[in-house]
Length: 184
Image (tube, rainbow, N blue to C red; front, side, top):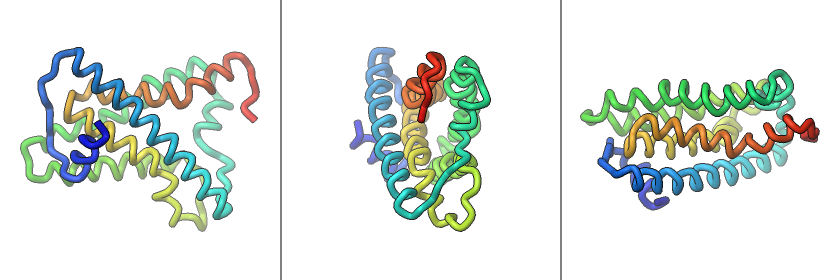
């Protein structure tokens, strides 16, 4: 599956293939594993590079969200609202280009913008603007997988993949918050 995603990334085309539900589900779960693995690996790399260069992110949006909202509200925001809204904003418009020679550019722009919009998670980055590509690499990577599944299976599947990704990554912290276990 990774080879197929890589091939798509190198030359994006609107796939929209017809699969049975069992095949779609198999593709979905393979992509869940890949998107989470890439997010974790790139997240660790991002953290390592940030620490190495002395970038301290004291006001990350996710940390602030956990301080401000209940576990149920975080679950709603991260696993329902964000996936639906972000997929409508970044992946739904790809359908407008499915028959166009500009689809490739629309896909790359959607990945770039999806990554870039997440720079807002990091609060103040004064003096570290050069670090932006590293900081948003996990989200840009996720954008590639989300764009792939969106064009291969449809928009609802990209929303589901996005939701599963977010749930897996923040789910343990939601459980900790629910059980009142400190994160530090």
